[in-house]
Image 1 (tube, rainbow, N blue to C red):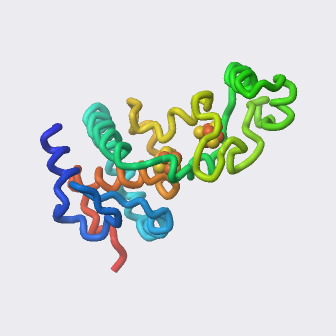
Image 2 (image 1 turned 30 degrees about the vertical axis):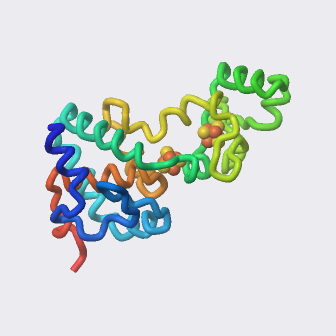
Length: 200
Ligand code: SF4
Ligand code: SF4
């Protein structure tokens, strides 16, 4: 499996991949332009719908192994501090222990922290009250050491159970270049037939 993956990820001239890359690195390319990614997400919406169904028929453990290896290789080529798009566009859930920890690190009272940064959602769930997140400065997190669990996990491609989270991964496909590139490489590695899903 690793051999196949390495061959697929690092061979720059793979067949069936005519339109994918804009950033060239030493051995391979990834798409890192969010405007291109968003335009492609619209163009590929029918194809991606079909790919989701295709993925649902793949064995869980094989899929997890490929996705986790792809995620490792692609994440290493992405500098999240130059992007921050998840921090700009997602609702951030905060737990009580996380709020305690961050308010302590910011040296403000918990009451003051809640007043400045928290709003309550359904079932009293605590959420960061602004989007982009109040702790984002340009494209960087100003509280990185004390960021929340959801921030640490996103885009969650390193976790087992990729198939169970297909809906959310495809929901974030146009927002996160790690997800976008992982899914596009996956199409190639699994020999998904892209052409037949394109409109005439
Ligand atoms: S706490 Fe930091 S990592 Fe989390 S959303 Fe806000 S800026 Fe992003
Ligand atoms: S996880 Fe995705 S959306 Fe968030 S900063 Fe990294 S590349 Fe951008």
